[in-house]
Length: 43
Image 1 (spheres, one colour):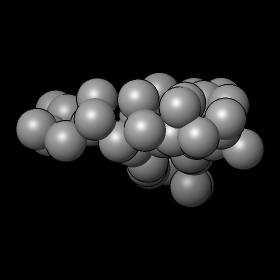
Image 2 (tube, helix red, strand yellow):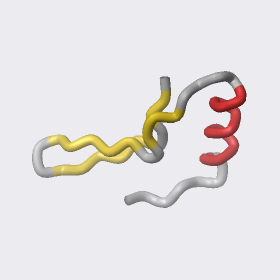
Image 3 (tube, rainbow, N blue to C red):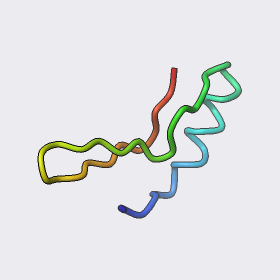
């Protein structure tokens, strides 16, 4: 799993304040035999 950068929590908090729902932190996707990591899943 990759390390979070300096802005991760700031972006997450800004999304929450703007009424977004964080669904995954991080979002893990399986692509064949590889695992892909996206910073956040939100809706």
